[in-house]
Amino acid sequence: MAKVEKKFMEGNEAMTAGAIAAGARFFAGYPISPSSEVAKAAAKELPRHGGIYIQMEDELSSMAALLGASLAGKKAFTATSGPGFSLMQENLGLGIMSELPCVLYNVQRSGPSTGAATKPAQGDLMQAKYGTHGDHSIIALSPSSVQDCYDLSITAFNLAEKYRTPVIFLADEVVGHLRETLTIREPEPDEIINRKAPATKKQSEFRPYDYSGTEVAPMVAVGDRDLLMRTTGSTHDEKGEFCPSSENIDRVTHYLVDKIEKHVDDITITRKYQMDDADVVLISFGCSVRSSLSAIEILRKKGVKAGLLQLVTVWPMPEKEIRAALQQAKTVIVPELNLGQLAGEVRKYNDYGCKVLQANRTDGILITPQQIVDVYEESEK
Image (tube, rainbow, N blue to C red; front, side, top):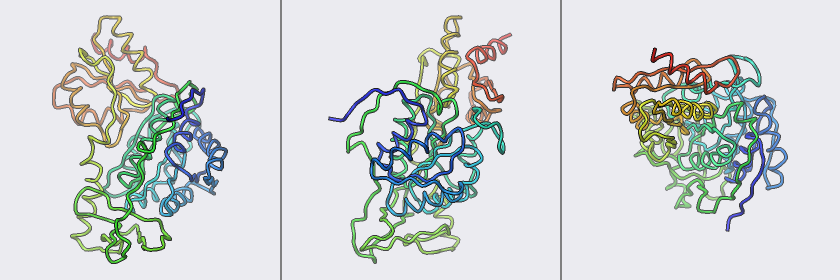
């Protein structure tokens, strides 16, 4: 029977606990607030589980080390915030092209550039998807509680291994520094996904990449006694060898998108609150969900049928669920700590004449429930 215990823990600490529970045994990173507690917990806990912690000289080398560990067969993670996340983008692209599973924790803060260190924001939503160049897809999850920080960390590693891709854990300063009681349950062995191993031991039959459909190929660790694992950031064929033909470039590009977008129903996680009769719907993610939950209670007491659609998976964007909310509601409000990045995505799907309102805050303070209520009431005047 799985071990279960209650703990009072910070969100950043819970992220590390979840990563280790998922089987992560390697961390490389460079301290940056408000994510430093993830690294601090990793430095303390990984050696106790036979893992390795390395503090690198910067975020570029941290991401490179992460990919090296993944190639060596380890489940690996790093943690950073806005400036560091920007520096990781080049090697994030390498991880996407080479299909190397890993998890990047981005505990968001105000930006751009140095911004307001340790002040909360949600301004990295679009960067998580489009920060590295070229056509590709990405998986990104966003927690709204300390419990999420633990549970979704396990989910993030499972998705990374299943789809052979870096996964972005898009947290924020509010949730990262929040302290709550959570339930820590060790996952059962069948709840943990590990990368597929090849069925062959013959090099002539081994294909570490497969572009024939949307299923990922098996992989082996670099240094395997029987099989050679080739990898490159250049467009390559199924053997991992450089192949710049027009046909192959097109095939690889579509595959890197389709292997995620064609499995969106498996990847997407959303939560609905009081949505059955809602004609005013809030759509939110991360820390803004906490204020949104209180806002719908205030609106309900005022006689407004309000509900909430929480996006736990933010990439790929849950189009089906957003469209359903837009079709159901007369008014949709999008609370977020930026100037409308999620709202812009929601409007892309609005073919139903629904009124879409923004509830934004960018001063380094969490949006309040009353501010969200005020946006609705102002629109009704």
